[in-house]
Image 1 (cartoon, rainbow, N blue to C red):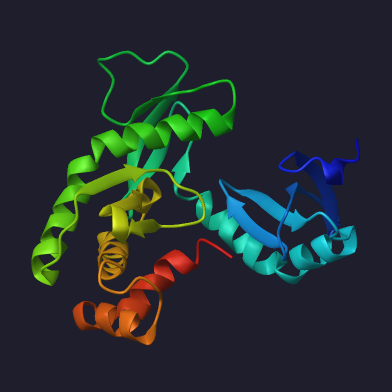
Image 2: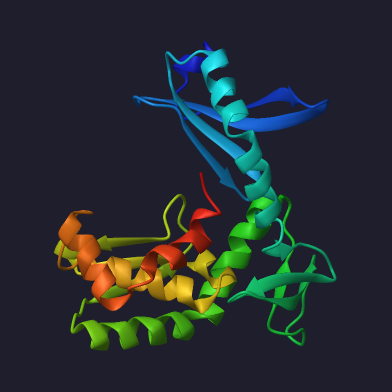
Length: 229
């Protein structure tokens, strides 16, 4: 079967830039536009089935400077090794990535799995447990300030978004990846998602609501914009 007809099948492809080979992961989907993300230092492309190779690679070349910048910044968030680190609220903390960690190792000790992707996935699951209370404290503080409430909070790794609010379900999800950035970034996302309890879309009224509580929200949001395309 043609690769393009196999929807959601990830294909590894390569292109050349300044004499270097650049690898990207391509998935064909039923969608209108080509989308590009950089996740865990990997270039991820989703494209319509009818998209041509020159269109896909043209998007990569158009954004190549920003892609390289993002890959570099993501590489500074954690380092997987026996003598590694993980950035916690903007500060590097010593971390151990070991094949068989034991209970007597420090807090930031993570198991190394067969693939780097699985290691990172499990790392974020553990970080969500370790720092659950830190996230809850920020949420509770802003709930009180904004006089808003909801029933269900989930902290986990999610792709492509820093947070999600489901007003009808009284539920908010926060991305554990926020743990890497200064606490102000988490506060911005919390205020952003809480504001969706009042305004469901990104209307002018929504942004005015955010501004009422975080007048400098645009400056704070730049911290997170540097991490995505």
